[in-house]
Image 1 (cartoon, helix red, strand yellow):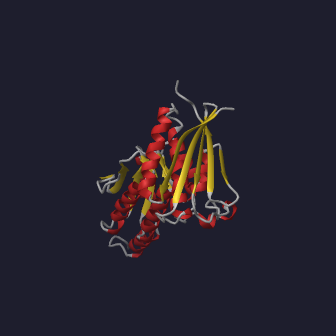
Image 2 (image 1 turned 30 degrees about the horizontal axis):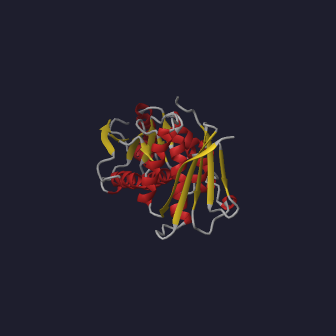
Image 3 (image 1 turned 90 degrees about the horizontal axis):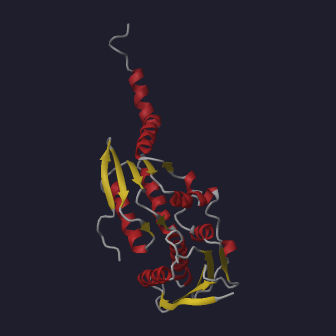
Length: 144
Length: 140
């Protein structure tokens, strides 16, 4: 039976939150509930916006777990952040492909590629662009 | 054709009970030598089928039972039948979760996953009994 024990190993890499799943099968309803709650807390309680979910240990997950991941992405998107996933095994990638959720999620091969994906989206985000524009519009003290 | 029933049980519509039944069936599959390569797919289909029966079929009503049977056919095919006491449904009327407008909905993917990982998935006419089959490798 699932307990409230930590089911995510959360670290910070290059300023971005990396959450690794502890369980190799996210099938049991009780486990899914706890995993979902712990993911949501990263956004709701800790205000984290740039998050990588590392699936290295995960062999299988159910449709209910997919639902939690979709809700997690909605939360991150609503906060103006970016969610990326990485290290999906072939059998897990098949789950995302047959459900066509590869169109919904940013799925990368490695943590490094997820880090790069998030950095790029940060540069391309409208708020970042506006900051760049403001800087450009500010007269430089070196300009003539 | 040889077909032997290797598991049969009825249980109240409760998710904890369902998790316990899943573990029992998993143990039976291991006892019958189902390969480690096939077990995760079977477990996924079993989870989806039982969750649908408990949550959607019997609406989590603990006075309603879910009946699950598992057969081994020709020493190579696992067949699972899951029946609930609900009014049933028409699987053809379930919105396609892979349609663009449904992609961000958090539910409705169980049948798609079962179909992807099993060789055969079918419902009876009433829609309250699911059968799925998978050809498996058996450890000697």
